[in-house]
Length: 114
Length: 113
Image 1 (cartoon, one colour):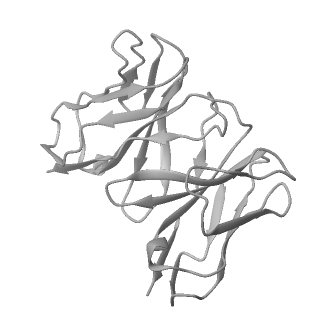
Image 2 (cartoon, helix red, strand yellow):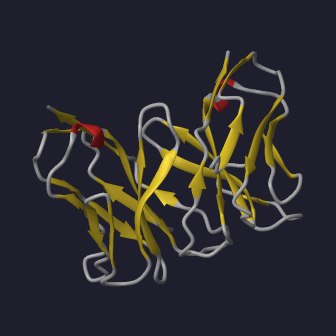
């Protein structure tokens, strides 16, 4: 009963390095999301994918790219990491993009940029 | 735009005390409302939801009622346990252009034995 699985759980990078955060869901959901969580700011949407083959920007997309590899997987890439990207990153999925659909979250990736 | 305001806490209670965490919102149209809970080191788990006015969401002894007239969705529990210690987030989804959840800043609850 995995739900939403994120890897890695922790990562430390140096400024300018690149990395990809992986996310996979086993609930056959159509929609997937990437959020970042910063102290005192709640969660903010970075990118989302309403369905396989589509991706769209959220409220804080700068510095990130995403790939919806297939229905199960949605990855987030930092091309040139900056200290401002130090955060906890959460992937989520929902059956479809509708206001009444709850989003199900993974356990997060804690990322530090030095 | 959409926004959620919740009491920031921290809230500290004794076991078996009554809990209320206030949440009010601003949104276009008729949003769906959610409470999520985050235990230390874990992701967010859906606690309960309500999708239209006067709906009551409930789960694990927690309740919240969608009050359109006061734009509120306050979380309540009659008797808290130590295991309820966590951060609680109120959120809404108004189905805008990106179907994002708009979250409050979270309320840290600590329950002492």
